[in-house]
Length: 142
Image (cartoon, rainbow, N blue to C red; front, side, top):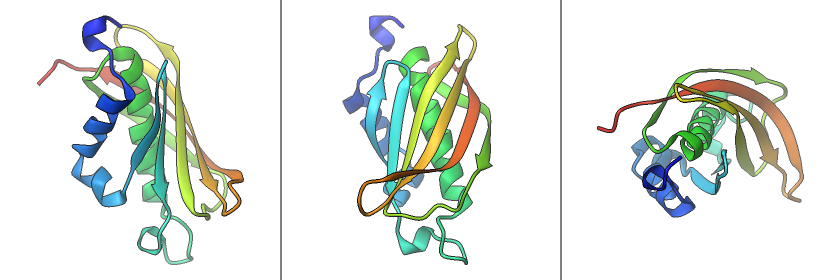
């Protein structure tokens, strides 16, 4: 990545804040750079499904955005998700959802990124609840 396409945590946070849906969920970036990104969301009642667990759509959103931000740390700021899959391992319950993504491989045309989705308990213990993998594509600047 050249200096002109380099991003830092502050710029990445501004980008996230520019996404209305991310603001609605209260998403925040807690780490960004070197081919990785961590996104967190406080788990609250209105994000639950009927059985009292965090809705799978929230997990999917977190994976999608974390994957894309991690790739953006390598490919530059103008990227879009090409596709991703999520495997749910256990119901998500706790106080915070943490999506920790890292680039597995990056070329000129795409990056392959994986993401662990964890919940944090009241004591800070992490529990893996889902894993995701996807491809992210660079696009021309708008």
